[in-house]
Length: 339
Image (cartoon, rainbow, N blue to C red; front, side, top):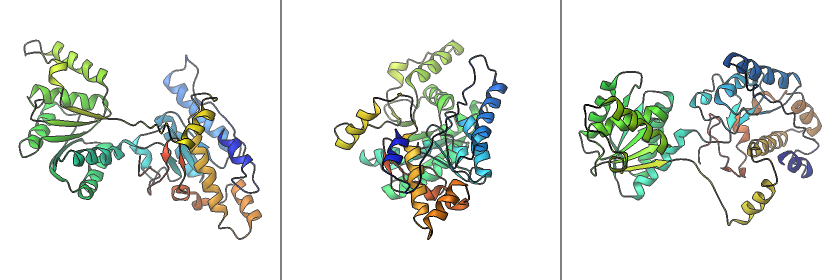
């Protein structure tokens, strides 16, 4: 759909875009090593065909492999599915950007929510990881913009025993803080919340803002805790975990004419076709880069031969495009700055 739109509207004047597809997904019986080999082989095959841009991959781990190669060859690469913070490292993934926000951006939403509730003092507990550290740094900036005070904060290392979690929870809750943001994901976050409950911090006195936690995962963690601590009073999920706000990403603009029209066309496609925004942003970035060339024909030849070099870094794709994933506005790391 994106390629048809680009070519029919002559989005890149004088150019005809061809989409080369290569499946990096391994066979059902493949082991981990052969899966990696398959992903690398797919990426190398694409690059050998002289592509000027890459879209994908579906997995963060596979994307990190292809993005290392594409950045070495100065080929821009856009992912529509890879959220891992590691891909923000421009020393390794210089030409990589994405059409999906990282979880760091949730700091903006959580703090905006807190401000709307009139909560002026916030506590933050964050995992000692790239995600946790970047989230905390962004939260410091955004708290100032929202007129909020981060009264207490503490990191914890999930690899260390429960004492580290205990210390973090005690430090953040011992002062004036009763509204607490947790910057951790998956089992790291649920382990912290179950431990908080066991310490008596899951009462009406506290409000917790969590990052995309699953109800099922939290319930499983509670069940596991009760099985492992039969000598202690059991935790009841329904009555204990009632002060939680869980934030996740979701977008729908139904009722807005252009979006409804787009959905009509989208519904006729394979529902797994998720790369539309990547394709459109990349094409618009190419168009913008060519518009600065004095000789359009020479510029097209440079584009086709992959000789535009550092003009194709992530800032080149800050073109003001708004697609089904919302506005594509990037920071210097190629990450969405709003979402």
